[in-house]
Image (cartoon, rainbow, N blue to C red; front, side):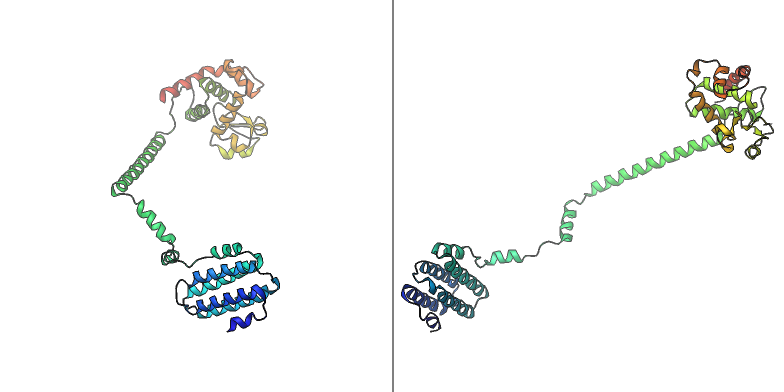
Amino acid sequence: MQYRSSIKGVTGRVRSAAAALTQRLSNLVTSPQEHHSVIRFRDVGIGLGNLVAKAEEQRHIRRLCEAGSAAVQRLSNVVAEPHEHHSARRLAVIGIAAAVFTGTGASAAWAISHTDAPATPEVAAAEDAPEKTEQQTAAATDGAEAPTPEKAAAEETTEAEAAEAEAAEAEAAEAEAAEEEAAGPVDIDVSDIDDEQEANAVTIIETGKELGIDREGWAVALATGMQEAKLYNAASTVVPESFEYTDSDFSGSDHDSVGVFQQRVSIWGSVEELMDVPTSAGKFYNALEDVDGWENMPISEAAQSVQISAFPDAYAQWEGLAWDIIDAYEAAS
């Protein structure tokens, strides 16, 4: 038989062990269809490890391995079931390798016993089961969290109410803006000044209000405007560009001073800025607030602290008119 010829020349107990192993392999191969053949072959591998451990002629291990390899190839060819073929081959190789390299039956048994056994039908079915796709998982999640009709209706009601509230707020703001636009600037009637002066006076007061300046500050600004340009938005013949920004017939020629407060272009800002009454008034108020204790000063002193005029006492003469304008504004408001 092929197995016997493969170990020819082996002597002593190794030869007897190889012969016994050969006979067992031959018996196993004769019934390859039996399901438990793999288990039987594992026992053979363990026996092989024990025999090799006792072998005195270690030089013949190579021949024994060759015999085992031939047995593996033979068994692989005759085992019918695919999973038996695969498992038998793996068991034989691991068993022989462990026996040869460790020389102990315990190591061989351990190597064989820790090889993968054929999967049961239940395990194979579980491994072959396809995983859920992301779409299926998302669909399941969506289905679990799907809102009830009552919840959906409540959410729609809340959104509708929020939209209505927002629309109502926007409508109220538009109505308020339209009302203010229709009302226009406060119209005052003060003796001794004309409509142009009154309009500029109202602008000076309202600019102060926007900046948080109180009535005392308004009075200082109005008195200053009366002294500098009689509350007219005056251009200057020295600064021809200034005429582009006013319709007033009142003009001056004192250096490069322009506007209601006759602020100098070289000091206070551009011609366009100083010829704009709100901007010019804002610059005056900002300078007034930089004066320490201006609130406790007489109007003329506070005005002079800002304007640095050659006629510091001239502002006082307009204090009464300033308060008349303020009173008329507050009455009209």
